[in-house]
Length: 233
Image (cartoon, rainbow, N blue to C red):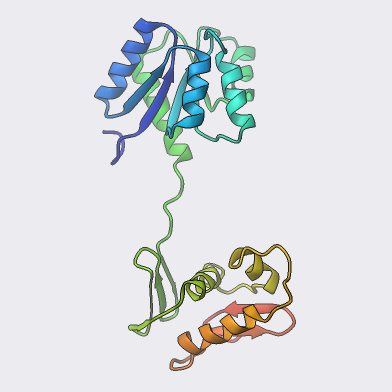
């Protein structure tokens, strides 16, 4: 298996023999594969499904491969795409990449090369693993368990307080303005002229700082707030 979890591939290829060959090889390598025999079907599946990568033949009935990829990119789909084509001149390859393809493999090719390119392509686009444990000094936040502890003592937070502390911890050592908090924690894109931030900051400070030393949540006058293990200058 190339990865710990099966990777879902969409193969868009009109030649049934070629499609069967690729599909069999990928399945034997641990991938799950869906197949579309023309460009329009491939586009529909790509837009509706969840795929880790697409393998798209350039010359397709209904909608050619380049137009398929261009349509996906216009609709903000970032799924990696490996284009297969018998057109192997430099201009052809450049055209394929500019259309939105991430790699371009010229026919004839060995399946081992197709597999290696696919694996390399997906390694490049694998998102960084989401950080699930945040820590500053002796304050810890476990995002998976939704737990907060300081000096090994559990701290109970309301959902909004948890979200506020998470944002402050992700930006520890930096000044966080009221506008940033309104947009990122409350989803306000305007100032509602309320003291909602002050109230929640006060509650949060009483929970994470009142019975501990040193204080971590600081007010930066005229600027905003900062989570730091020493007072900001």
